[in-house]
Image 1 (tube, chains in turn red, purple):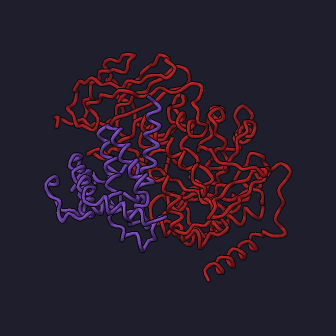
Image 2 (cartoon, helix red, strand yellow):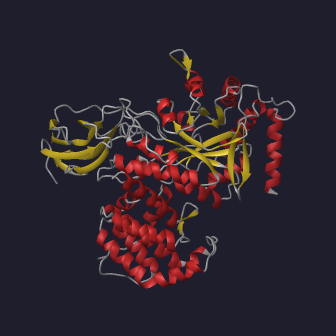
Image 3 (cartoon, chains in turn yellow, purple):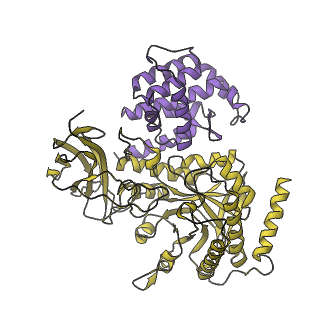
Length: 439
Length: 165
């Protein structure tokens, strides 16, 4: 009965949305994309009739590097980013010129930001925005799929709101009524049984489930199978465990994996994602840089633009080869302050030595910053804490530094950035706390 | 028992599984772990091993996992051999030896990683992946966690790390 009811719901929504005879055929500019397969045999995308495995990233910068590394797709979170011009060229046109496909993110309102899925006026405005987005880009040859929303069910909680998923279904129908050439994906923050059941029941027009998952990324496929998910999925954000799911210090500062540990995590996750027949591929996060807990947690590039070892790691997983210029590799760490509470003004010798695979000379830059006090959820924008002046007493070009701890009690991090001078580098950090006395 | 410490050891295992570990840790009495095997059941030994990891007593954790392997590996291999795929949700809890010994091998891998002993970590993960691939562990979020899958990911991480040398 349930499947009959779902089919009926789907038919009604499609009729409301105008899908059917009135739906528009793919335009000559669009590259048609379709899904083939089954839960038993697995799924794959066919783009212009040819199999297409998503070797993707979340982000819109460093596209030339992405191509050189074997990536084939970018994912954005909104449409405006794709329409914005740099040097007179829209991002989506630049992606196309480089041969990259684009999962077009269409931003949908979040209740935690004040959007009300029970407010007809807000819903109507959102539907109009979705329509404009689809009509603006449906004919573009770079479009691979529509990314309908991002974690709009909320990054925490059960995420099984009937109201939200029925609206997602309506929007999916709206897209399909205007574009039959590209599948519709919706993107959620992790999964749980109630969320998956709600999507299956209330949003049958969604073609692909996109899951943002970090520590648990490689378990998503198996979990979806256990929960009876019958369609393909993507891992729409992955990399390393997030600050909310990793080891913490006694003062609740998340301990960031080292750049070298991150590399293993990105490589393994990418390989596992590509190995699951039900998974259409993944989008490593973040092809760029952002402040989220720290300035380095998710960024695969330094704030100054150099690629890190995580880029090399996904390159290896995608292509079984290294990039032309590899990032430095962290070798020896002696960090007596890591995770410790120490007396103000203490002076310590610290070591974070890296080597460069090409033997290039490395430069080291050390700095102490306060622990972030601007922590948000769901990836919302955060302010980066200021550098604490006067903490680096000396530093050499072999990864050795003398650090004088701040005078003011509080929580801090010591960062070291290493660069090879040829476009590659790494950043690592260790949290510590300064008290009035040592413990 | 330090709940936060237990959660903190869950790196790479997923938020959902951490919930399970916290539940285990909360349920555990405070013990002199290295001496007390409780009722010697595989479930007790596994729970005590997780608890020891959470408390940062890595060598103690290995005592519990070692005892679990010693007592129940044979039964675990027997249960694994009886399967040609993952057991159903209903049948999985009956495969207690397979599930607990498999989990213990994963714990051993985690401990050896924390002790910077990649060789032993690899050995533990390899044994789990190759011999006890159908082990499962119930996650209160609503599915079975599969230690061998987690081990396979760990193996890939360690293999990649070896390529960096």
